[in-house]
Picture: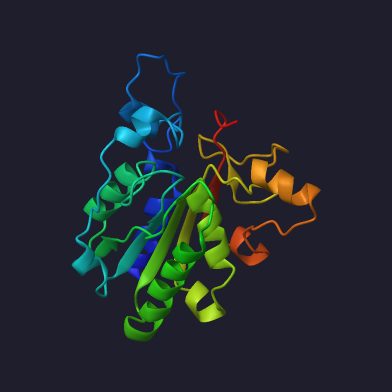
Length: 232
């Protein structure tokens, strides 16, 4: 129980700075490594894509049972590995809360926005954990296209599997909709803005389904949906 509580506090509190810290406006001379920490380095930026992407936990270890797993889904065009958006946070959590592993979602993250294989990856990891590692808990992180992936995966988890998900963090969610309790701004404050994600707007106009957090997850105090104010 202590591990679960510690994980939840680490993930959901404002102490996740520098990743979720407020920051001054950037200049053209600011390095992209700094921009990543201030939410101003967006997916597709040449410097952002040139930053090293790697697994923090060896794949063999990540597949084994652990106290908790940090599962992150990277944004469009990011190379396979832990998303640069979450890399500092994931390292910090693992360094301060023992027993955990990092397991990046394996999927193309291509321009076609097809997240199907990534959704299957997340479902397989959690459902296998439910069978083989029943005491294992999970934190799910999604950036940009990865946020879409996490939303769609959450919608497919049954109640026992969903109960193991202790924390959800979305950043730059293209399907973001207003009036969610989980909506926060870049300084972790409740966001009452009426802004709508660009994909959500398109889906609404076309009478299509908008992937979003369920009411239960949204009201659970374990989810944060960060709006990138610098995003188009």
